[in-house]
Structure formats: C-alpha cells, structure tokens
Image 1 (cartoon, rainbow, N blue to C red):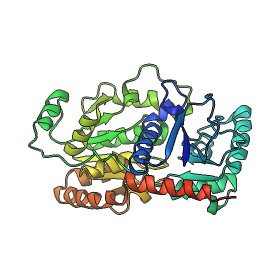
Image 2: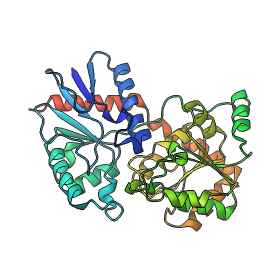
Image 3: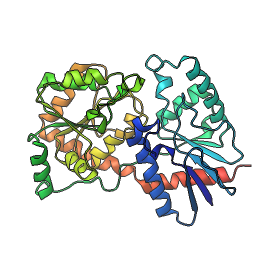
Image 4: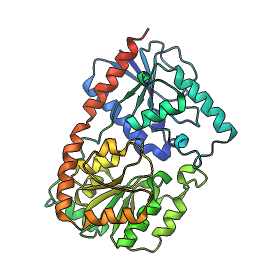
Length: 355
C-alpha cells in the first residue's frame, strides 16, 4: 500500500507550532510506529505545497484547524484526516472567528465532508465533530494516542535522579505541571490554587520562558496573567524546555502531577505521568475522563478552592499517592503505539475497501 502523509506541522515556524508538542509528537510517533509494525507498506512524507506522487492509495492529513485552510476542498485520492479537537468551535467566545475565519470554517467543514474517513483522538472530540459538522458516526474512527515507550518508572537511587534534583534545586516534594500556557490549560487557577496551599509548583514547557509569544493569538490570552501570578514567587519554578530524559525523571520524582484543564482533545501528559508512576490530579473536562479513567483525583476546573483541595489531599497523603500510582500504571496499559498503529492501519484498509 502506498501511504502518503502530510508532515507540515513538523516544520519550524508552522502556524500549528503553538501546539507542536501534541501535533508533533503524534506525527513523529505515527511515522515510527507505522514503519516499525507495518514495514511492508511504502510511506511517502510531504509538506504542504509539495508535488504529490502519482500513485497514492491513501492520503493522510494528520492535523486539522477549523479557521485555517489545512485541508484541501477536494482530492482525487482516498483521503483521511485526523481531527485532534475542535476547541475554537466549542468555545466561540474565546476564539472569535470574524468574517474571514467563518468563511474558512465553512470551506473546512465542506472539505471534512468530502474526505473518505476521519480519525479522532477521543470519543469527546468525535462528538464535537458530529455536532459541528453533521458528519455521521460511521465516518469517524476513534484512535487513541499513547505515551512514548520510554516513559516509565526509574529507581530513586539512580544517580540521574540526584543530578536533576541538584541541577534545578528541586524541593523534596513538589507538584508538577507539563504543557503549554494556552488558555485551556487553566494555569491562572492552578497557580492560585498552589499558592493557597503553599505547595511548590514546578512548571515545564518551552512557552513558559518564551519572550516572543504572540499575545494576539486567542490561545495565548492568559499568558501575561500567568507571568504576573508567577512573578517573584519563589514557590513556583519555571524550567522551560527540558530534554525527554529529564522530563521522565521529573515525572518520577514529582509528588503529584496536576493538569486541571478547561478542555482537552486528548491529554497526553496525563498518560506520561501515569506511566512514570506519578499520581495525577486533573479535571473532568473534554476527553480527560476517557484517558484517566478512575486512576486520578478529579477536581472542578472552574473552582480554585476545589483544585487546591484536590492537590493538597494527594500531596499530603502517602497512602493515596501509592493508590493512585498503582491505578495509573494499570490505566496506561490500555494505551500503546502498537495499538495506535494497528487502528490507524485498519482505518487505511477500511478506506481502501470503499468504492
């Protein structure tokens, strides 16, 4: 089978760069997994604007944005698109489309209706796609993502653990946040919550230390507020970008991982934390309950006091930490990249069987 995949978001400066950890992670792991488990196929990767090969069995666009023209209106090839989420449509007050944005969405919606099949990261996102496009259930396949195989527990006695504690001057116990500063991450409430209960918060993510963030971008509407809340507070440490090896160590030594998001299309850091045995405190918004199951402490994303209570409850209770850690390690077994590759390949074969 000749499978052609658009990898445009991997290019530096691409307009999906603000979400490159999610989209980029998906693309890189999809490439590796398909080639590893299904090497009999021919995989062709291209960037938007490249001339497509003549012989294509399946054309896959693994990203979609409603207010950008990411998807061609028509294609002579059997086409699949991955829609990770439709956040701007779910929260229209946060993402005013304007006349141009609305026109683009109408074109994108028509393009979605013209593809052969759609892949979604979660049942939550699938429901949103059906709601906003009228596309039927049978045309959308849910294919869950997974944490990278390298995310796992390490021994606390390892020299690397001691080194990272020393390098970043980490406290013995701390809450950990990993991700963007986009408004859906709910960072102002998270920061207010940890301040209330006087718990150290370690924050990881490139955007946290960037100086050229586009504040006009609706995704970044909370950026300045986050910086104001952090400014001068010694309990909150922004590490910015860290290597994958260091990230795994941070998940391993954190007392609790917390991500009380207002909305998620998937929620990858939750699985990463669980894979490393880190107890998780999160919200019930969007796809999160699908990913977390009963292996976490849920909080109300819109209530600072409730977020604080949930974090404190886990942070101060070793027995609860152990319980959530064990449940998390069981929960993550439901997600792996071999399974993601198989279900993606099944979708390709399903498209091939269509007349």
